[in-house]
Amino acid sequence: MARAVPETHDEILAAAARRFGVTGYRGTSLQDIAREVGCSKAAVLYHFANKEAILTELMAPAIDVLQALDERIAAHHGGAAQRVAAEGFVDLAVRFRREIALLRGEFPELLQQPAFAHIQRISERLIDALAGHPERPAARIAALVVLAGISETCGEFIDVPDEELRPALLALVRRALEPVD
Image (cartoon, rainbow, N blue to C red; front, side):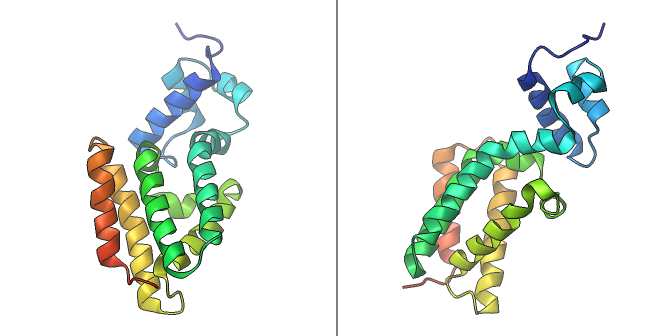
């Protein structure tokens, strides 16, 4: 028998994360989440205004770290900014790879949602820092490929230990990007 109200707010978040992992954000409805929890859609809506609010809360810790990285990058220039961006993004991606895996293939569409609009601006600054030479199209292309590759890799290799994944990603970043002094 279905419960009238989920026991906790976190129970809904966990169910949403599982559903997003199976069918993606777009492919998951509030009814799917409610079914996973064992409650009504109204009970889910009691805790969250909509599906975007669930996703926003799920992604909040990663977004907070991304915003802090953006602030650290802004405090540096040239090669120092590139190093901070590379190491910071690798650390973020490794730490939040389960969240990244939930949204694989859906980032461009999600960035169009109002709750995530600021992420696009941060991404542009991150690409500029990684490129080191943002006026050069080849440097920007390499930076974008590195960002996308790190995200995809972290989403794919969830079970690889951090101490193995992080150095492998940093070595790749160093080979892929044009150094800046």
